[in-house]
Image 1 (cartoon, rainbow over the protein chains, first blue to last red):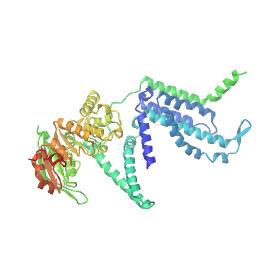
Image 2: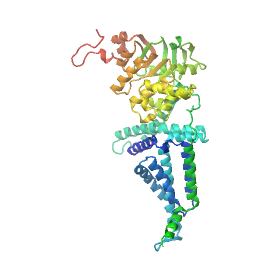
Image 3: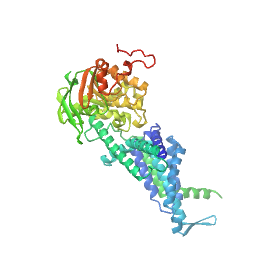
Image 4: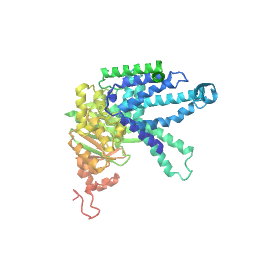
Length: 270
Length: 255
């Protein structure tokens, strides 16, 4: 259970990052959400052999993390955790696609290797963009932004409650599991039957807690819909951020900036 | 000010599984009184207070809060009048930030703008929690959670405060802080608690429940001096009224 507790602490840390006060934190959550979506669409829509054109996109998460005071080491660690998954997804590519598409210093690089690397690069880009988004905005604000952008209300509320009680659930689950662990002798009592009973109990407890939460909501005048405090409206800075980022992403998407810089440099050199 | 009155008449409650949690409970609490509901585990305390804001419906009997009998039609008004603080603050603090949680009730009551802001700030100030406003509830300590939970109820300006085990799980300092905070409130207060020293400090009247019935109802000191009654109800006098275990001197109010 130690890993689960650790994961929870990590989540709390990400949550705390969102309480920062840089201008990026203050941007409207909706703007950050839409910008990230544009970023994702641009990144994933490249051809499968594309590599060099993806590189400029790294500017976005790195710049945002730097300006938003997000610890790069922490983010890098999170991204590394996800890397094996991305590596695994494309692992068959080099074996299936033998066609040499690129010669690099006399070594032929096959399409399979290229597409594999492309998958990893994209995974790193998308995950870092998502982490930066949560780190700069916070999960609750993102849920609200989703709702304001037209996502179903029930969905946003569910997501919000999921996040709030995830912490409680993990803590309760952790306690139950620890108590089982402490009373297991060797491998005795560790089997599926005690596990099933543990999970069943957790479900019942969740149920009871849900009832008490409902009671607390009713006690404070809940009538079925969530009241919303005053809503911020978009400011000039928000629109500027959105326009600037979108422009940059579309430029990166349509022109290969890496190659352009490369040919510029080699053009200048004699 | 009759709206601060709580009247329970011949209340009976049977849970769906057949457990009879309350048999025939009657009492009347008047304006400004501070009353403790005490009793052993399973005596019916929690069941009783869940009736006071209409979360549980009586199997038989009647509850009146102020001028209204508790019924479906009066429920919204009664839920505003009776502020309920839960034993486990995690049940009560469900919004993403402390500020939003305290604002939840007032928003439901239709407050907005500067009025809402002032109301939330006022409630947080009263419990000394203004600096917690932007935090998430799961980042708070137990004592902080408790105070925020109280603020969340105060923000609806209730006339009657009902608290389930307010001091449970608090460290001595946080407990002391909470007791002084509660002493300042002029509301009608109803507590359930096993912390009888707190009861002695805050409540002039005590209702003892036993097996779903009112076993005794009277001044706190009188009840705590009746050792036979306490023993019968699986209770003990508050520590401050017991003799000193070291020097053997007699506790306060004992003689």
